Length: 116
Length: 116
Image (tube, helix red, strand yellow):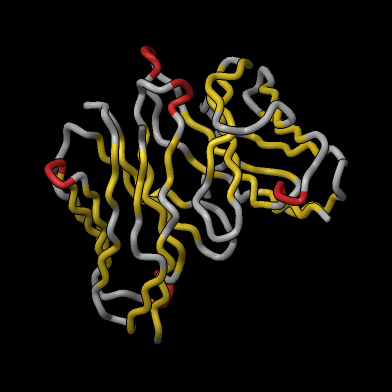
């Protein structure tokens, strides 16, 4: 096991609702990245947080937002849920080194979100 | 733009056969990292290997081996004497430090089924 935990494991919401997903990073890791994985696809980068600030974002609308806390844990918030938001949401933690280099990302078990 | 292609969508082999999973990548950067992850049905991405662009040595770890060839932009993964427990979806990923967020670019994955 990686030591990265996510909650909840499964979630069912209806269109238009809001959802918050949580991630605790591996001990010693200072960076958290979030990915969306649709069925049968590879994970797609949503954004990354480092030192409590967003540090890079993929092609996702502003209704996808996040937070990182001083203990390096993180939240992913999605507003105005759409049917296409149904997916596995993966959190990955890593160590960002001086100069911006990043070590390997270790993934949590994911949260399966179903939007009806 | 960075891109990872895994042309093999699904592969089935009989137990004890060898199998090679192909990965072809595109990047304009000279410094980058390549990864392989395994995703069992539980959903968690399990880290298998990381290789940086300056290290073209092939690597062997037990039944697993990796062949990195910059000349063909390929990073192939071979499982020797496959076992049922190897059944999973395998993802190849690319990361380069130059892009904000050090995001990982994943291929679409290869689903491997090992038949007993």
